[in-house]
Amino acid sequence: MALKLYGIPMSTCTTRAMICLHEKEVEFELVPVDLYTGEHKQPSYLSKNPFGQVPLLEDDDLTLFESRAITRYVSEKYEKTGIDLLRKDNIKEAALVNQWVEIESQHYNPVILPIIYEIFVSPITGQSPDKTVIDANVEKLGKVLDIYEDRLGNNKYLAGDFYSLADLHHLSYTYYMMKTEWASMINSRPHVKAWWEDISSRPAFVKVAEGMTFN
Image: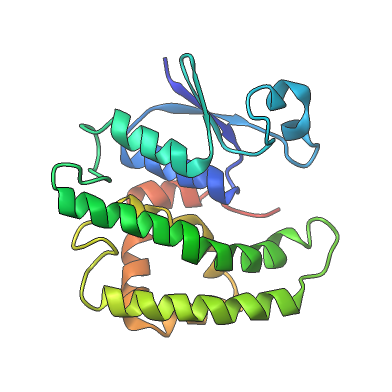
């Protein structure tokens, strides 16, 4: 029975899970959730995820939400298929993957998310982007990217010379960033730029990116 992933193709968190599923060569059904009509806040959906967010994964009797929990579950369950995203056979490599997964979650995501929200989501809700919020987080993101530039000057990917879940987790938000004037933050840092061009050209991401459009 194919896995069911509830969400929408433009959602950063849904696509994070989708990219992982494609990298692991796992068949799944994408079940659309209409966020515009508030389907994710209806009792039928809240009974699956009480936080009313996407994505949500169903695997037989398992219901799992939070995109990073889903990617880890998929990476572990299908360890022997597709690319090795966790490097569990090497404890030091696995530790570095875990470290950079946390860095994305705790340092990168908190500063890029508000930028993407203001630029892409606020207009959908009838609001104008808050330049103060954008500027404050652009400054913070620049400091994070300086650390990435140093790291990627010595390693092809974040956890080492291998693509991993740590790199994958950066794809969705950075993709939208690259559609804004702030793409220069990536392009002005040669090692970060090379890393981005590498990971964003992977077939699993290219396939998912086709649906990442705000209408």
